[in-house]
Every structure is written in C-alpha cells, then in structure tokens.
Length: 219
Image (cartoon, rainbow, N blue to C red; front, side, top):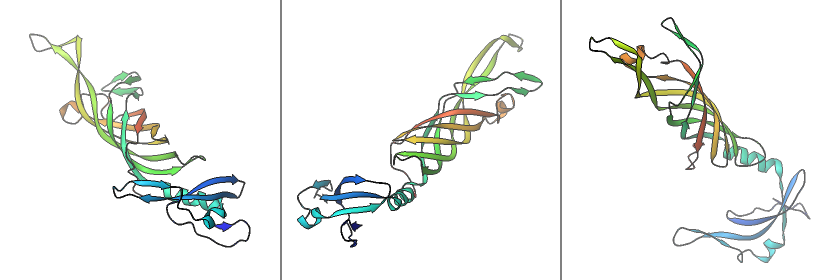
C-alpha cells in the first residue's frame, strides 16, 4: 500500500480495520480506524482506539487489479456441499417396444455436489460452480396387482417407493449461501427390478437447490 502524498510504501498489519474513503478506476482509498484483537475466550473483538495517530493520518491507496487478483485466487477452488434435486424431467424413451412419453417425476434426490468454483460478477459472494453430483434417490416403481391365478391386473397398478442411486453433472450459481443450478444425470435401481424399470440408466434433467451451511472450500 502506498501513501497518496509521497509514493512511500507502507504495509497494513493483519487485523487492521479500515474505512473506504473513495474509489476510482484504478485505486481504492482507505484509512485505518483500528485493529481486531482475540480475547481470552478466543473471540475476535474490534478495537477502534488502538490505531496510532500516525496510522490514522495516512491515506492508503490500493490498486484494484491487485485486490481483484487476490480475491479471485482466494475464493476460487474445490468445494463440496449438499444438494437436493426436487423434480426430474425425463424425455420420451422407448423401452421393450413401448414408447413412454416425457414426464416430470418427483423422485427426490439428495446427495453431495463436488466441483470447482470461480467468482463471477463484481460481488465477492457470487460464484459459478461446475461439478458432479451423486447420492440416493427415491424411485416410484410401478407394480401391477396379481389375480388369484397369478396373472397381473393391468388396470390395478400401484407405485412402490424404492431406493436407488443417482449421479450426474451440472452447473450451479451461488449467491451468498443460496445455490441454484441445472444438473443432468441418470438413475440406477439395481437388481432384477432394474430390468423392468423403463427409466433405469436413462438421462434426466433437473434444477438443483442447495444451501451452503459450512465454509467447506478445499482450495
């Protein structure tokens, strides 16, 4: 950081509190107003009276390009968080010689979204995230009733709720801690019933909803 008046180079110590005084196309102009201290209870406390008069008299200027580069490196990187897919859109498919129309299913999936994020926009709380999703999913499996002779009754079909595995990839936009995005993937039922389910390993599309409860970036 450089004093506005004489180009001398100064360094603000870690924990310095400052006030933004002005901004132009190249610089931020800051003044020191105090420091932060860690109490005996490990709590961070702001102390506005500890800044020396000399420090308060200095008007610092910081190059915006350096701030942006620092924020970009600091905030981008690997991350993971929980994600929910409330609704899936399934396109038209052909299965065992029968055509099944497109549909929206409520096979809710909840799992982990692992990927890489980069900052977008001017806000430091906006990110674009690309990654992969995997987790368990509820699957509505149609089952026909059986008559006394052991034959299925076509007009008496019930949906059994089974647990399957879902996986996919997508793009997610994060604003503050709320996350919204688009995920493309497939469901797998497993076992013998997977051979009877028309949507096993078939592509679906879904919008994703998530909330970042923890700071779990790995960069």
